[in-house]
Amino acid sequence: MRRAYRRGMTDDTAAVPASAPSTDGSPRVALLGTGVMGSGMSRSILRAGLPLAVWNRSAEKAAPLAEDGATVADGAADAVREADVVVVMLFDADAVLEVLAEIAPALPAGAVVLQSSTVGVEGTRRIAALAAEHGVRLVDAPVLGTRGPAEQGLLVHLVSGSEADLAVARPVLEATGSRTVVAGSEPGAGSALKLACNAWIASITAATGQSLGLARLLGVEPRLFLDAIAGGASDTPYAHLKGGAMLAGELAPSFALDGLLKDVTLMLAALDGADAHDFDTALLEALRETYAEASAAGHGGDDVAAVGTVFGLPTSSDR
Image (cartoon, rainbow, N blue to C red; front, side, top):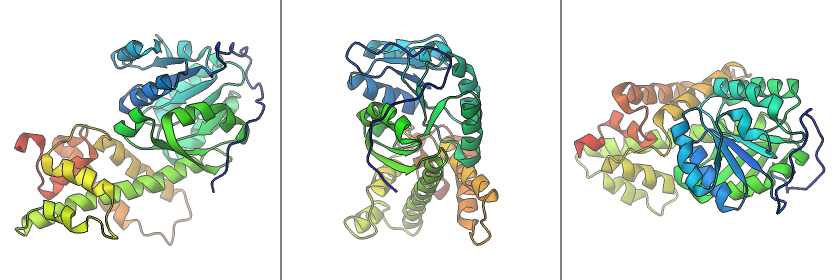
């Protein structure tokens, strides 16, 4: 379900005084986690003219953002003390829980936390429970997109939260994304939708590698597969993007393979906790095995296109 944004009043839900508004009325933003996605989102936020403080556990990853105009904080709590909106972009639920517990006492009254990490269904439940315990206003807000869309402000936000909280977060969502899909009014629906979307990404990436590898093994120029599907009903730009990277052995990460392996594992975990008696998990289990094989071969930090190596496609060292 999609719905339009509606601006509304916010409730003070924390004991910390509200932050003073920025001089032009723009919300003050903090972003926690400046890896590939977080750094790209940070630059999009700054490009939109929003005041931004950033923090990363490995400080050297946050430092370059100072040149773009961000304030680099020494600690996560320091980053959020004056924030109206806090974006959390970390690797997994445990990292989010640790940071949320640290920042909760420092959050200004009325601040909204956009939890954009991919943490799965159970992880979101745990995070929402901790947020409720501390009176933190939480929006479940994972994203679709990799390095390029993050840097260009073209992510797709998959959100679930109250209309009032979404209204507060709207300037940040617009600065970093091209579209926002509202999946529900409570945290959890956004993360569930993200798992469904990443199941498609995991499937089509592996299937592209399989088809290219099969063509090669059968004595056909692999690129002819991409030529054959171009413009047809089965075509998708993603197959050309990742297929081209596979053929060139260009595996610099836009979306690290270990991240997608983690997400497939989260999908299977979510099904364990659901009424899934009529859902065949064979494909997801095969995908987990395939990505795990590529990771074990040393490609965990490479782009998801490295799954093609399982099907005999080149690595950068083969070129």
